[in-house]
Length: 378
Image 1 (tube, rainbow, N blue to C red):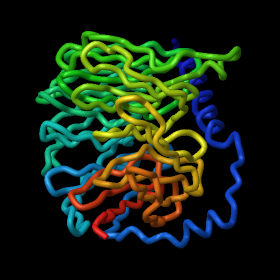
Image 2 (image 1 turned 90 degrees about the vertical axis):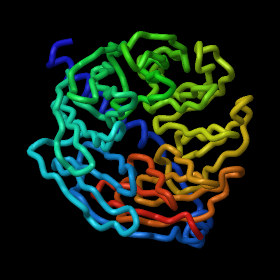
Image 3 (image 1 turned 120 degrees about the horizontal axis):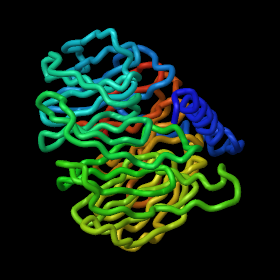
């Protein structure tokens, strides 16, 4: 595809992504909104600030008693996990588009120009590498391999020592897709990734060879819009299963060794899912968080009264499920029944990416650049 057509597709994708979250007005009763105001507040440990982000969204990550954040202005910041004190900040001339990723002692960020920058925990740059297009999800590292995904459907494996390219996988990219921050999951010496059209691929972490492919969802409908069923979030993995969810499609779990389908249920999500030893939790469209039995896929509970239809991917923290929303609120749900236990407001701007677990809580970053650390010790 030539650059001109690529820009058209990306522009259409951005418009479609916006449309998907505004195509239906959901009215909440006054009693429901009042109930949200009456729940307990989540204890705030500390807050800090980075630059506001207009296009990209960033993950806060925890590693070795420190929290890292990045922003579009090209700043990478390290905080003390207990107090939020800034330990160092790297200011670059790059425009960061994705981060922060961690692994193999590396702190990783990506740029709109398709550059991967690797730093050590002291903030010193170790290497810089280039791939074919912009990076929208954090690079990940494991077993001396850095894996990064680009907006043009490619997955790259790089040497964690110097950033040199080791392998590349080219995924299929339909003419009409949802522009998303779909990432990859590294586990058991493999890379798991979902793609437009509802396909999930398991490939070798070491050479990029495909082990198996599975259909999470199949396109349905007449028009191209109706037939879109993209996987726009990273799969989740345990020792036996890998599960994924597709927009306008299904949530499904497969055997990790050969991709045999174990169960599937109708679902639609552009946010993502999480897994513990009992359930698969899915942030579904229209502001619903749902739990499915891990072994059978049976529906366990659904929570639809959080006052927003745009929620983040769920994150498991102990007995709680953490989800943020487009109004800057953070919600704690009880894992076994979905009951809202506590809720707190941040700066009123969208929380686009999921929380990052901390030893005694979690941290999030807002679109305005607010970095918040909360405790789950009530």
